[in-house]
Image 1 (tube, one colour):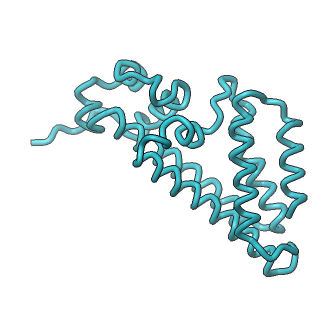
Image 2: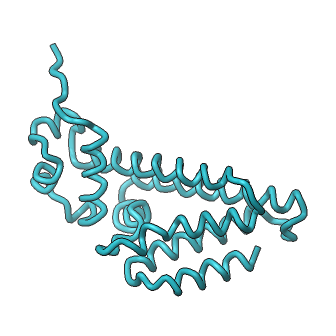
Image 3: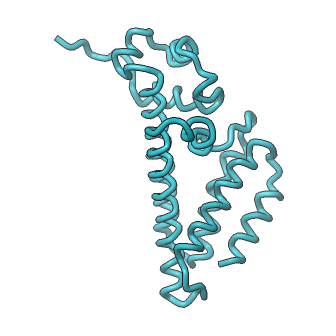
Length: 191
């Protein structure tokens, strides 16, 4: 008979996200996880098998939460430029308030783990494609309704998403709102 879990998996994943985000994948030991998650080592192994599986689950959870928020903003009312601006502002809003300056968990995983881990690489690439597609849909609507003059919505979406990733990396070294406001203003002006 299977034993019921005596912990909330969403709560555990939220704690795992914060720990991996702060210390990185390689900097997080199994003992760190046991201490931070508040569950026994056996429960950790029974539920997630190993650190790598937990890391993947944490990335998937982070992606799911982020995508929900981004889709909500993208579906909002307003011009394509205004929606893109809101998406850019959302991308940096939490990071500039983060005292630990962790940057973006997904981008951190992309830099630290994805180059030598096929599963993480696949997850990161899927996330990147979803984000690019969201920007593309917003931009393409602006092109279709005549607001935006570009003929290549995909190239613009890639450019804007690259600006997002750049800001997410920049957030690891500065919290100066003026830096991000300048980047957002210039990015939107390209549209």
